[in-house]
Length: 536
Image (cartoon, rainbow, N blue to C red; front, side):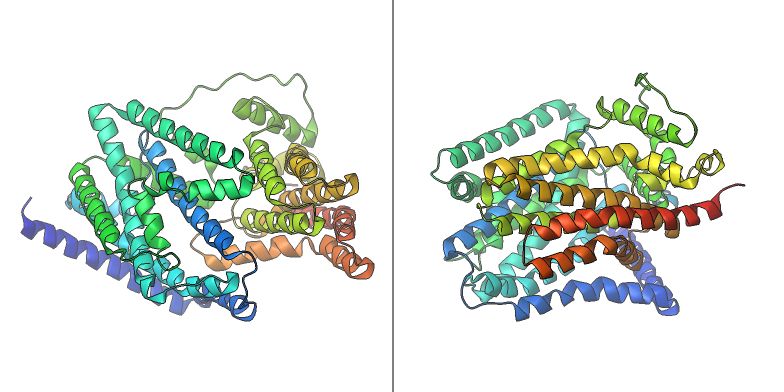
């Protein structure tokens, strides 16, 4: 391909993206809802600077070395997760998520070369990462003041440039691995090699943590040790990102090495970018289906289509309670168990981690549990959940039975799973943090209550906001607001109990006691909304 044609194609792609961006701004200016959403989207990303400004302390809240080790271990863990999980998936399937249905319908059929389209997607990736780098550079000085870390501001440029390089390199490396795996038929070999490396790193980390005097300190020292730091690309990136906080004479050689590696990988990825439209179309269709809540289209488009496995749960229900049987069959077909799943195992691991790092002081354990519950509520409240898909199927409105019974039936097994999730989280904390039975029972009731109320408040969210658009940040915040407001009948008694009784345990019991009231209100409001949509 001649260089003149490449430049013409790049100019055409630039014009298309520029026109798309301009039209987006014009549309936002003409629609106040979208404009408010944009202001919230970008404004709230900087409003978190306020607590960092007012809560900062000149004295470290924890020993300086421990703070630095914890920050370095977090950066290393994030980099390992990004690269190894991406490479593991790329050895089997490539999932380019940067393309929309507009690209599928207009860009892909155009005469523009696939290589040029992919190269332009790398440029877009680099441009979009500039904003992420800016956020990191702005927040890092305030975080360093908050936790009492000394920082060399002159090296923040290395952190910003590394973030940009890593975002492009990770995407290009995944595509390169996918191309090599499928072109030369070595996908299984690459996948086995990646998994062996992952198992080796996990085993080394576990050995370092368990052989030390303190598991937490041993874990931090191991992850920040020479073995992880010498991993090509990942170790270099971690050192460069941490360069403002650590003593390093000149990060420039590492940065040049990382940049050279990124250039080589991008060039190789562009060279192999000749047959990826099929995967891009599949991902674009999947994103469109999820955003509209239509998982039936998503399931029917999977290739190859798996043959359904016959499942017999040994019992059945009638009327609106048939949704319990339907959910039991679906759960057993997916994970061979009706109310057990991998999510509970994950929370068991989280509970073990909390139990190891928490002291015998209940206030510290309570802080971890409240942080987990808040994160869970905000995350679940911002995404479409299973109930939304049921509400999109017309038979739920035509089947006989009270709306309240249908809602209860849909969430019955999910509530049972929530109770088990709470037990999986609390049991290791109870044992490892040496809590008494009343403290363990309090946090179990609290975590289970939060999980169950999150399920039922999803009814209101998905009836009031049936369409989910991840790009509409205003809608995302509205979903979160409804999620939190629906829990007020349980939150208020918890606050009152904490203030009146001056106890850390009482608010958890008060929250659990207020949960039935909150659920009753949710069911009453949801039934009224649901009934208006039913076929009489």
